[in-house]
Image (tube, rainbow, N blue to C red; front, side, top):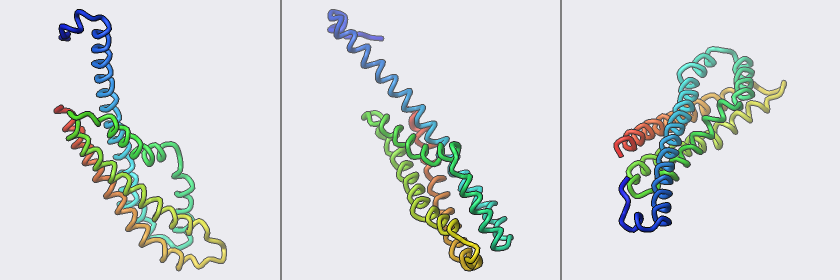
Amino acid sequence: MRKSVAAMSDPAAARCTEFMQTTSTTTQTFGAISLVVAAISTGLLAGVFYAYASSVMLALRRVDDRTFVDVMNKINDVIVNPAFMFSFLGSIVFTAVAAALHLRADQRTVLWWILAALALNIVSFLITSAGNIPLNNQLAAATDGTDLAALRQQFEGPWVRLNILRALANTGALGVLAWALRCAGRG
């Protein structure tokens, strides 16, 4: 480590310089860790939504209306668990933390990619919150007297389309985060 002439003659300046270098290294380390965790949580969430699109909803297309409503309600009951919430909320939180830790001028290229991923993760969150969850709530409100065929007709098509959109948003965010990791590795 090179020290300036002022730092060599002034112990307080030397400590300040050392502290700043340590802080910068710590910020870079936490920035890299948060970027990796953002990519992992985003990838896990993209995988959940992809699994729905590529298998779960295709299988449920083959069952009767009562089974469809029952299974979707059971899935919706168990999906809110720590593992899912890590990816659902973590995709946004860790991406935002990664952005905050890449605010330095020398990290701006990486920052723009992280911000693009954050925007895509927020789009997925909004699709889920404003689209899929209200549809899930309508399904959960079904009673014994509900016309299940009509309920399914109102639910299935829109829910599947919204799920595909959020899967694409999270997959795009994962790709952008992968690029951000590549750019950060060059830095």
